[in-house]
Length: 479
Image 1 (cartoon, rainbow, N blue to C red):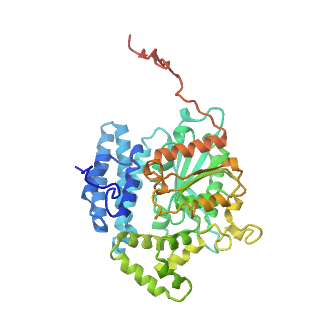
Image 2: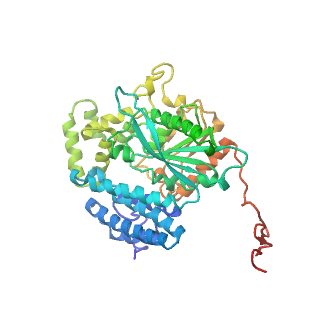
């Protein structure tokens, strides 16, 4: 069993800190069925830090065992237990394939098959949920000349009839993933609570995400707002084709975490978006990257006193010793479509809200009046920061800059949340505090939409329940 009392608080699970955040991310899914504590502790105790070859087989074995349990539970009619096991299996399969960017080309088909198994397990879980879950395909036509039409895969979670808000149509929350998340993982961040609160929730794979990257090879776009525009067009078409969904197209909101938070803010400039929750978004990717690299080394490269070759050599050599470095640059290279580490760092310059550096849809109003993309955002915005690990994400560099440039959002419609303790959301993407994240998210959206909720369940009073209970005692079928 895991030795709870033999490690220092500064070490968490490992001295190798990169594992800490990734494992906290997994354990953080436990409240919504994405992880089991004992399974987690057994696996953590067996992991070898900084060893990529050790990671995959151990997570795969756990995923397959959990999937087998889920199928047995469903076969025997234990559907609630089966749903939870399918969710855990999906998350464990996600972990098993997580390090695919650094794996040899000959093994990529194996890791892609693990991702498909994660999707399958998640789909099996959705069939056992109270609310209706539908697979959708979102048409996205990149604006580049002769670019092929893409079909972005998505999950649309619709509230059960009993959960719909009385006297109003169904509000919709669009969820955008981060650089290395999958839309199936987003269930634990936003979807688990949304349908039960009367919201429809849409997740999808955009450029650089999920199957769109893995199967289509489509990298990230600096003008991420064009993707959100396509999603909004899809929702309008869907509402027309399926009127029974009863969508409120005047109550469409967007959220995302980390990279997804950046993209959500870009999408929030569309007037069809009525509110935005940007979870630990990044203001300027290049500035953040440079803050985490040795200044003495990068200074001459920035001024062209040193070529790309030396930067590439330094990254490659360091990556031989450190899985986190190897993963970061391999994953980043895929994300930006970069040929080498130095080019990846250079490509980050486009991913900013500064209009003199970034690309916008149709280059709208570029250089005319506005200096910052965020000046186009006018809807209510909740911006969060993560102060739990100042070496990872610097709130003063991203969160403060974002709040400062949301100049056209009324003060009463801007909210800032920058916790420090991990239990309160101080880790990046609020890992380990997702129930609190969902509460803060939907509380903010409720307030912006004017939704009021009772403080106790329907029919509950101080002396007990009136629905089947009387004065605290059961009356249905009992004397």
